[in-house]
Length: 193
Image (tube, rainbow, N blue to C red; front, top):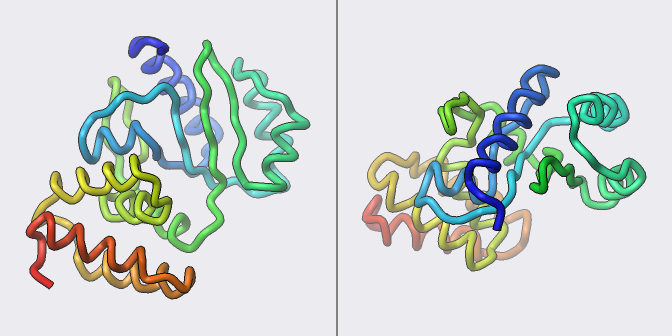
């Protein structure tokens, strides 16, 4: 497992890069879960970015100059197929997800600045991270969502969470998301439903 010191350096490098080129972003994944919930081990940096398709080639050129490594043809293929791509820096990988959903667009508007490793960076609101973790539905993501609900007990915007949970469940034609948000709100004693 790569050491923490190097993860801090990679985190700083990618944040400075994104801010230099004014790329809208927010940190997600294990780092965000640790900042907004409970710290847990992670070996990469996950970032949601707003990147127009016609700017991707320029973005890659800038990233190359900044010292990130990647396979350009693989990045272009992944962007086209999944809206995600990966860079490497110092043995660490950085996973990018291009914002493509209404929730991600909304999260970009609601993001907050938090200092981590001595660097101010953009993070989603606790509500937006909690929702994205529930949408993913993996066991580790549900665990992260539970920790966010516990940490922000009594402080989360219940109406926002329930409105978005219903909207996302309607889109998915599956009440799992709504039911999971209700469970976390009850579990965290945030609201008795």
